[in-house]
Length: 265
Image 1 (cartoon, one colour):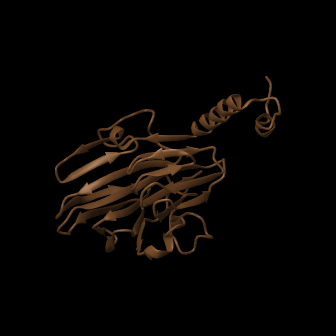
Image 2 (tube, rainbow, N blue to C red):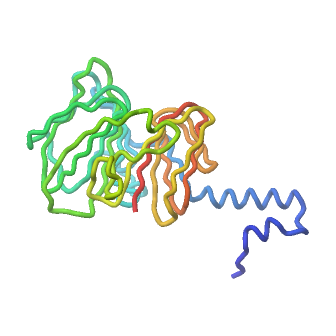
């Protein structure tokens, strides 16, 4: 097997312009294979009337063996909840559940006595641990839109917990801000029991930002609004973007955009 040095190949003095363009396109296509766009229209899901749910990974009645998880990221649901409806009390165990509110507000109540209302742009985290029962309702007069994200923990058998936090929206303009994390250095983020992060940013059209991830980790990224370009690959609002073998994720907004990213081992 022959091994080529990319830079040496591109700088070779005897390659004409047409061949050079073909080589560059081939290398670009090779890189793009590390970034898979999962169009919103192709996601699983169901409309229950009060709940219009789309599933990036197998969930409930939607099953696709090719989309069971992305590393320890097990669930990414795109939910629209009608006014004055919601999820009645139900149990969870051994799962890190992050809710990012895109529009409206969600009200949480659990059997530990926790209760809180999380508004658009803010985050709540529930570590299900040995077991917790909770409800989530849209008590507002308009539709609430959320991303609900489940990450498999690397610690089990621990007591359950819940927390929520408002994050100043201005801090995430033009740069990713970590909202939930399993790393001790992210002291301002909500804590999860997994070696993972959830980060968010808002970009104006034409604006770019970078997220250094390292080629040994994976990321899953969704634009809650706006179309974007991720390392040269275009994605529309609410498409899923599965990323691996990439050192640095570069996101450019084609339109004003709100972007959520999960970084996992």
